[in-house]
Image (tube, rainbow, N blue to C red; front, side):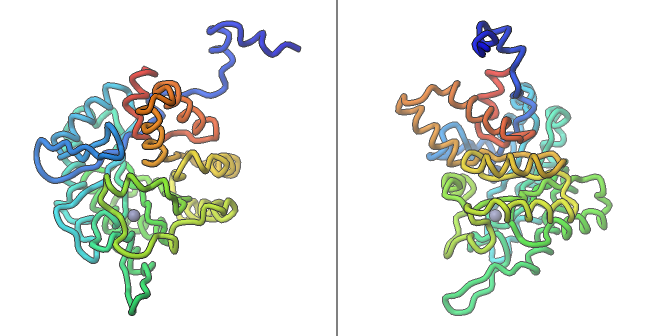
Length: 324
Ligand SMILES: [Zn+2]
């Protein structure tokens, strides 16, 4: 046998290619901030910005034109408080963005996904309600569920096609499903961040979303990076509670977890190529150590090959331009 027979030229290689990567597989994250005409660069993430709503509309138009599958929206509120009120306010920053985006023709071609979490909106930067006694603190699970449910309902009402809880509280998917149904939003799907690991690779995101915890860390709710079986239990529970799709995060250091999930469940699976994955590649590009286009596409193809149906990535536009 000579394996090289099938690698001889591009048409042959195209014919036997096992994994595809298309613009429609990609979801582009946007960080929405108050104001007008604002494009604030994130220093640790070249090419990524905090965008005011009008600028986000321009990004949406470009994304739609490139054939990108959808947008994932995060918000930077004007003010923060203990509870994270800005997450569910009628006129919250993401709600404003959703309403405006929905009026743009671009939204007909894009799935608008709203991240459901409190960490961008709480003064302490944790993903839920915090109770403190002395030096000890706890992110209080059950009171948080109601706040998350309120957030999801308000985002869906504002025009989110999909809500995506990323907080890792127990029971949030069923709480959100119940609240959506009760609000007459039975058709709004839930994309749950089912297995989200406590990762160092989120570092640059916290600059982008201004969501670094002011004390402690997130290891009491996000998962230990050592645990694949625990990730499978998280996924099973989220699906049981009514998740329509699941999202795994980070991607590259956890490709085995994506593969295991693919083999275990039949719901659509997304993987999030997180900020640190993007930033470290960019650092290598800047030094001229890696080829931008090839390394970017290879990093995305690897995630698809591991079993992800779609990929949330800051490379969405750059990759779509090459793939289109
Ligand atoms: Zn959070």
